[in-house]
Amino acid sequence: MKRILTFLLCTALFTGLFPVNAHAASQWPDNISIQAEGGIVMDADTGTVLYGKNAHTPYYPASITKILTALIVIERCDLDEMVTFSHNAVYNVEEGSKSAGLDEGDVLSVRDCLYALLLQSANEAANALAEHVAGSVESFAELMNARAASLGCQNSHFSNPSGLNDPNHYTSAYDMALIGRAALNNETFMGIDSTLYYDLPPTKWNREGLRIYPGHKMIKKNMPEYYSGALGGKTGYTSLAGNTLVTFARRDGMTLVAVILNGHSSHYKDTKALLNFGFKNFLTVSAADFDTGFTSVENDMIIGGLSPTGLSGLELDPDMKITVPKDADFDSVTSQLAYDLTASDPAGSIARVQYYWNDRKIGFTYLTVKAMSPDQVMLPASVVSLAESGSRETKAADGSTEDPAPSGSLRQSEDAESLLVPLAAAEPLAASSTAEDGGDGEGPKLSFIQTIGRFFAAVPMAVWLAAAAALAMAVGAGSVLFLKQRNRQKEDEARMIRRQRRLERLQEAGISTEQFEFMVQQKRSLASKRTGHVGQDKGIG
Image (cartoon, rainbow, N blue to C red; front, side, top):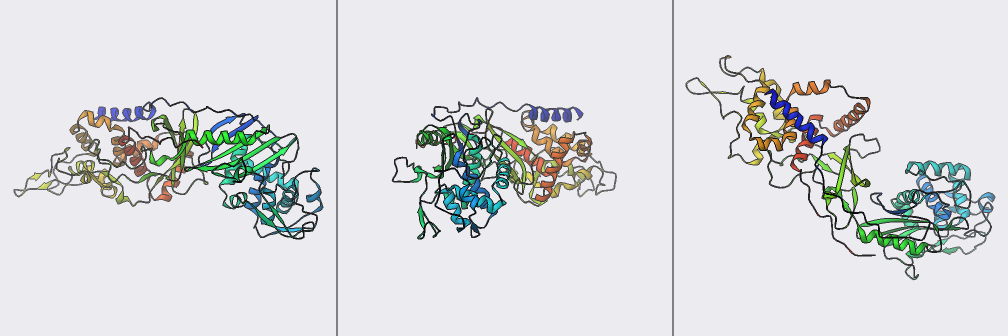
């Protein structure tokens, strides 16, 4: 028996430390070039970089800065708040820079100012909004840098809300894509940014008001630069920055963010090339649709006498996406499970599953546990019946004891559903080794370890080797001795922190650690082979 347990644990450790090799990943598409000094195209749903050129090199951004300015204002203000234009807001701009004809003393709503900012690229509107939010342009710049850092920007520094020339005002294509991705996910921002015209109210210099139009040509159907699927974005230009451009576009369920920095009058051509490259070569898919390693197995497969029916407590978040090249197999994707979640992660999440294509991150999702009562979590009936066989012998008519079924065996007539029992029914398992029998008190009694040994002896070697990890978790769910030994193991501080976070989330979900680990191991063993074709080429944009 000792040899069986030792081999079982070694097998479980071996399978955990040495995962099965996946098929070699297909080559990541790279058949594209742009003229701009810096550029990037990113999947907005997953954050996956499809292509980048000098993506982390700092450049002057010019007026695409106003995307970050608008995002901060929207997050901090009511659109109906009124903004008064100061002398500094109107006149602290470079001569000849973009303006909406606003003057000192004009009063507009935050909504009006945002339209002037994003459509007309009005620099005085940027200054006025900054003063309204933070009291001064300098204080607002501090908010800009803090917000950029919160989005993951590492190669940016902002000194003003407009993007006018300043040696300490710069960003990278990657950082700007992160900012653009956040703005794209803001419904208010996109409602303003995608507008084709807007009427500003009467002001000192425009007594009858002023109709303004967006500067981004790719969203205007009457322009040769128009791009089908373009949602919005922002243009920029200064003598130092050159042409800069941020563009949002959506086709066939995929949403892209393209950024051009230090362009040479080729910013629209480069942007079209980036978008076409992304839509032609990639797909955005739900990881839950293809990764069966952690979700319910809905087939007729039975391994080691265990049916997948009832093991549906775990699921991947269906709303989270990953990005893969078209015509690729999911076998080219690898994943890594992490339990170190934070308070910002979704409620009910147990772990985070990060997906990779070679070393490239292509998205992530969350592993969650459905709200379940203990009697909904299923354990193998064979384990329970074996444990009970030592304490539930029945008395025959002649007073002798009879075992209702041969110990360690499973009746072939039982259907798959009957091979599982609620976890609540298995709770007395550990106590069965000491319980008195129902006869004269002198009947034979089996310890829990003896019971498990009889079970393993009855299962064919080839079968229980394939299900070693799953059976190990079944033993862990029922053996108090094993749990105590496991709890006595010394763990380093980092592991303890991760475990505590996981325990807290499990408690919130109403699931015990043993239940969760049992389900994970069962599902991994049942889904040892992952297959699935992720899609077909849907054409070029």
